[in-house]
View (cartoon, rainbow, N blue to C red):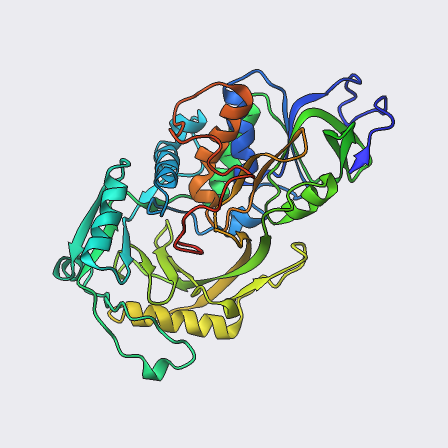
Length: 427
């Protein structure tokens, strides 16, 4: 963290020597743009977003699975996900844009997990009591709606597929209003909405240092040599968050690991079934049809072989491994044997920043005055982004706005105890 020895240096905006902005947000992905928009829509604070990428959704956001669902272990997270889902379902109202790019496609989400009746009832009650529309479906009802599916709940050993013996489940949780949005479009929309509220957004310029004076963060230095001074800096840098925190000497409590996640895309025709979003407990993977209906997206099984930690978020393999593709397709064929398994297969890889302790993010003030965190979303950033933006903005401005969650703003505080979780992508 660089000490500020010359506050009179000319900044990028040629501002006065006092704080040029009230808030600088590092990162213009779905989290950073949501934070900036939420602050600006409820206050007259001067906000700037800086991002070294050329434009929105070029980092983790662009590779998001973009599923909106609400089954979480912690009731407060259920409500946070639900308020975010309401924003995605009413995107024009939320963003204030007349013609937003993103929209919401409701598929419903089926959880094919091995659960006792009492465990299933508890999950159902947790959703219903927190406002989420859900039902428990028996095996016959699931197969009536989606006869293409197999309802095996026995965990698969991918090292010995030939020895697998299916064990059929009897009852399953179904989220009626779960669906998907357009991750890149939603990011572009939030940037546009933030700009209509007066936010200055600068892409193509990275942060190379965090400025400090008397142990307080006072701004950032950019890779072009310019400085931006601010009262607060929000680190929403996705898989690059550790670099920013190291510059500031912050956040040494939680282990946040940028991790390569592999996504497989297969052709899907108009004659193929309209399957629900399916969360597969036997493989720890999930599947969902793309918004246009021409492809199905398959998330690779959540096993260490297919989740590669990386120390350099700027350099990682963006194409899925052949073994991962073959295994993921085999897992999907096991789950949906009634589907025509043909067509061109492609894929992509993105980075999730995994919180190794509890799979939940770190959101709020850091231990260094003037630096706030929105880090470690573990693959849940898109689902929670509108609500996370509200939590940060409400804490900073003291003001509420439509679509705000009723959760405490310190739910994901740096000094909290680890939250309950079922682990990984399901949390």
